[in-house]
Amino acid sequence: MEFSYIVAGFVVGLLVGLTGVGGGSLMTPILVLFFHIKPALAVGTDLLYAAVTKSVGIFAHGKLGNINWKIVRLLACGSVPASIITTFNLKYMDMASDAAVNTIKFWLGIALLVTSLSVLFRTQLAKYSKKEHLISAKCTPYLTVLLGLVLGALVTLTSVGAGALGVTALLIIYPNRAITTIIGTDIAHAVPLTLVAGLGHASIGTVDYSLLGTLLMGSIPGIWIGSHLSSKLAEHSVRIALALILIFVGLKLIFH
Image (cartoon, rainbow, N blue to C red; front, side, top):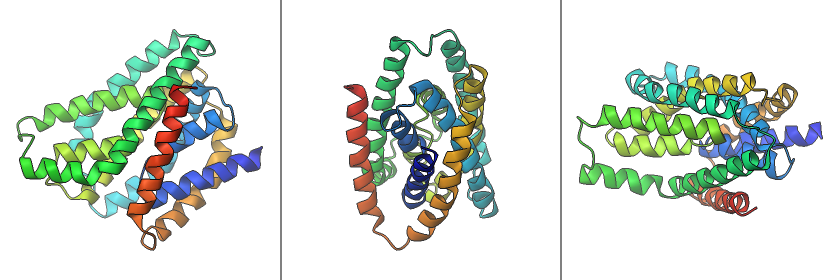
């Protein structure tokens, strides 16, 4: 079974390296559907897994000047309190009950469907926002904090959203920012968010540290290989295939 977890970690790492989509969109559903890990345990373990893997990205993007720390702070002003409040509510739920399991599965499925749409239409949404000047500069700080609130609650409950949804929303709010800055900023924000959410899950006992270590053994080489292959493969085709997988898995979780 440990070897299977290493393979799963490698596959997810490879796809994250190829597409840039957060591991939560892939790892949590794999743990729930294929390894029959309890949803709350899968979410909690995946959050700390994401915090470790994405922390490497901060150093890489920071050296390249791809992080806008003002946007990171605005996002964190919304996401960190939302994550703490969501964890506080989870603490008073019976995480092993059918109601809790079904709730997490349902919202995980919804998050995956929304993520798949953002993966498919990210470029078109960004172009439309830039062309139509949808958002005025005065509104951007408030919308950024609001985005942080939504991501904080969603990521803490499902572990999905910090990657694909965050990048797509930031492209709409900040259409004139370079895509490299948006991605770097999103990764920088994802680290404190997933760390706070992961520690919150750890406090209620929904983290499997042995599983976490095994997944990282596969994901770290997977991300390295995927990053090097990304320039050689048709990224558009990979994104479409990934979006279709997310739609299938999302519907399976909702109607399971």
